Image (cartoon, rainbow, N blue to C red; front, side, top):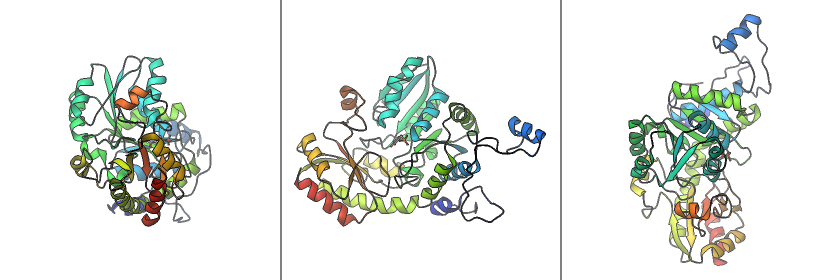
Length: 393
Ligand SMILES: *Cc1c(COP(=O)(O)O)cnc(C)c1O
C-alpha cells in the first residue's frame, strides 16, 4: 500500500492494490468467476469501460490485478497482464505483434518453445522469422525487413548465457518503428530492468524467479506504455490466457522474497562458477560474473548482478555430462530454473531437443552443454555435491 517507498524489496513486499474492509495484511484470494453488478446501468458502464468494476475473471480479478500492479511497479512499466504460463505470455506478445505477412527477428538462442512455436505453428499462419546472434546488434540490423513487426530477445539467453546490448538493439529497432520485447525471466526485475534501455515490452515466466518455489506455472507481460498495454490485454482476454486467482495469490506471495532469494542464490552462484572454472574436468564455463564471459563488461553495465544461471561443458563431452547429472544428490536433475533449489539439466536432449541439430549448434547449444540453476542451499553443500558428481564424470 505504501507507494511512497521506492526500494525494490519494500515494493516487492508492499506494492499492491487491495485495501479491504477487514484490513487484511495480505490480498485475499477472490476465488470467483463472476462479479455481481450494483444494477443494470453499472453493468453497462463496466462493459463500456466507464467504470473499472470487475466483470468476469477471464477479463480481470482483484487478486490477479494486485499481482499485475506489483510486477508493473517493479519493472517500472505502465501496466502488466498476467497469464496462465510463461508460454501464454510469449504468445500474447506474438499474437499482438505478428500476423499474416509479418516478420519476426529474434535471438537464435531462446527458451526452446519460444522459438519452436514460431517455426512449427506461426509459420502455418504466414508469419516469417529470422533468428540471429543478437549479441552482435549489427546482425539484428541486417535481418530487418520492411515487414518486420517485432524484435524478440532474451538476455542473458537460455542456455548460452549470451548477453545482448539492449540499448544498441533498441536504437536500431526504433529507427524502423519496430517494438522490442525482452524475455527477462533469467534476471527478474531485481537484476535487470529492460525499460531503462527503451525496450517496449518485458515478459516473465513467473514459474521461475518471481514465484521462485517450483510449485506453480505462471507468466506475465509488462508494457512500457499504455498503447502497448492496450494491444496486449485483448489477446489475453480473447485467447483465454488468463491466470487463476489462486495461482496469482501464490505468485504474489513468492514475489515478496524475490530480492533476498536472488541475493542468496547469486552469492552461491558466484562461488559455484569459480569452483567449476577451476575444476580439471570442466572445459569451459559461461557465467556473466566471470571475466571469461565474452560479454562480461556489457553484463556489468546492463545487469545489477550476474545472476544464478551457469552453463558449462566437461572435457569428456556429453557422456561425462550425463554421468555427472546421474550422480548429483542434492541438486535435482530437472528442467526449470530460478527456484530455491539447485537444478541441473541437459538442454540438447531436454529443453532444446525440439530444435534441429543445425539450429542448436548455430545458436551455440552444443551437445556437451550442461545448465545449472543455483539455489539457496548452503553453498558448501552445493559444491560438495557437484564435486562428488564430477568425480564420477
Ligand atoms: C520457462 C521459461 C519460459 C516459459 O515459461 P512457462 O512458465 O514454462 O510456460 C519462457 N522463457 C524462459 C526464459 C523460460 O525460462
